[in-house]
Length: 126
Image (cartoon, rainbow, N blue to C red; front, side, top):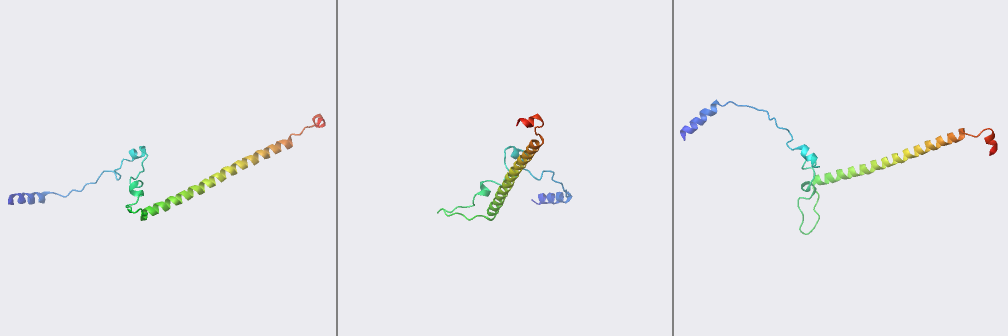
């Protein structure tokens, strides 16, 4: 036993410290595979582990929301209200564009009707 410790101590004294740089990617998740499968970039961002409660009561009482779950729900509500607002603005813009197009066409038709009037013997036929 004494010989082994002497060898270990002698060999540890001759070892020099080495530092190396890790060349692995910071994200070890295969993003191309996840995108091809239609999965989110972050596997913990969506799914039953994040969306469902941590526990349930046996008597059927509703479980209180967790802090992050409540934050996610509020964020989703804000996004939904923003979508409704922007779709309303888009519908308004479409209707306005159609109205402007119709008024421009009617103005063009009015100008054409006012410019082209029968003259000479064609005026007398009416």
